[in-house]
Length: 189
Image 1 (cartoon, helix red, strand yellow):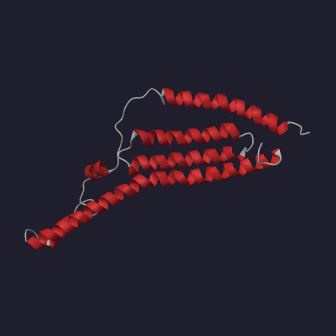
Image 2 (cartoon, rainbow, N blue to C red; image 1 turned 120 degrees about the vertical axis):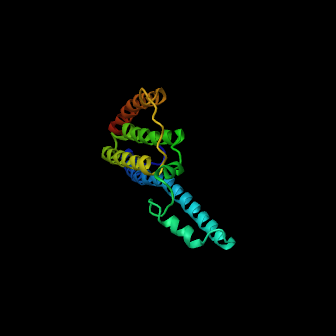
């Protein structure tokens, strides 16, 4: 192996890199859940700002008083936002197929790290469970608060493509673990 020195140093370096990777993955789960929510809040803010400017223009033109428009706005049952629950849900960004695939791929990649390198760094198994739990919680929050509710569709499973990816990952992990065992347990000359 190039640049490692001895094999023990390579395994230690691999363990450190995997720990760092899982910590960054845990943080990224929350960031990716917050991005659609922040986009939604910005859209609402821009729309409210536009309505305030229109109310000010209407007051200038004499068609309505600014105070009456703003009083009506603030007395709405939705904490001054001026939208019903259904309207605010419709303004949420859509949960696209690309986002769904991305959310599933993160779990698959992390599982791959555990299957491929869990023998060298057993502590990443615990980090994987913590990361998956945080990912699940962040995804639940994202689906509940930050994106438009997806239309329910029947599915027979996770899909043939993901099943194939999982099977390929598991088969390659066996080969990788055997190779790592042979490399770390071999006697150096």
